[in-house]
Image 1 (cartoon, rainbow, N blue to C red):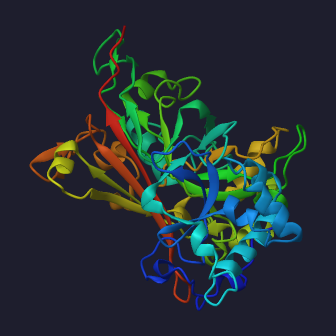
Image 2 (cartoon, one colour):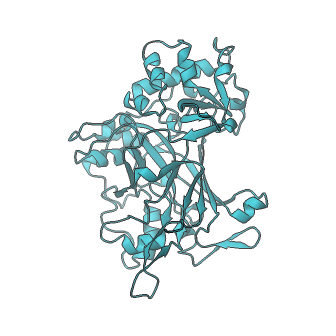
Length: 441
């Protein structure tokens, strides 16, 4: 069930919100992503909104107008809650129907154009919360380029383990430390084994890193024991966001064998506030093709529809702004850019494998793609790769250099889709800032 292109994607469609019609706008009428928000500095109840240009359409206020009917009314009423979990649980039919209703309401010439401006709130005057209550978080390892690059540093004699081409590798993360964009977190403290040492030490991480990823929000869930087949996997996906899985490489390198990441990963994860729905991404699909020398996926991870269009063409990028750059008014410096199309495993394969053993996924669960590194050096999605483990420092303005992140560094992720004949859509940004270590009592 791959979302189809329909009239909501028409590149000729324009909105009565003028900012949505600008060529470089992340949020044209063809996008319509969802977020949880309230007016900045207020004690208002959080509610769901849809981005249109530089504005947010308040869906609780829209629902109060009583202008929707049938399935649209059911879906719109689900958006009167602080998070998207209730809408997610309704499945793709409801979210697709609501998207069509909102597109018509926001289109130039809409009968609602005279009344709905009262329900708009400027994005610049809003504060955001996590868009869903995230019960569980699983981070995958879908880029074979990232896996090979990191493996070459950790295991030079055996960089890519033999199971990688057969099974979508993942670990279960910590949902309690996921924060929305503009998250600030303290540098993690833990055990590491310095190079050449025989005994570990305990202290602040010295090899703090970012990871350029996307997040996949589960929509309708499955019952315990009921595996989701490939043909239905995307029907269980609500949408995508940006995701930065911050990593303490020195802690991670000491602890990761034999059971994988723990304290090196669980201290912070940052996501963007806006969830771009699968319906919005329909025009940017590509075929899923593996190198001819690689094994074909096992049958439970294969499907004709997935092969025909299971890949999404999403450009991703990461930038860094040091505290000194911020004080000087300098913009974040771009470090790398890549694309989700380089992933070795698709969204559908992640969902199908996650549930293959009977694991029940629930509305609002979050899956990370893993670092989306591409095949070229400038497409590496982490400092571990960009600096060869800190050996080749990156030059920043004002004579600064970085091997790994320093206190005060702000990392900014961005993403967008564009294709000839389509309107460009974006994901906004996911920003996070490193604070000094928290003093210990």
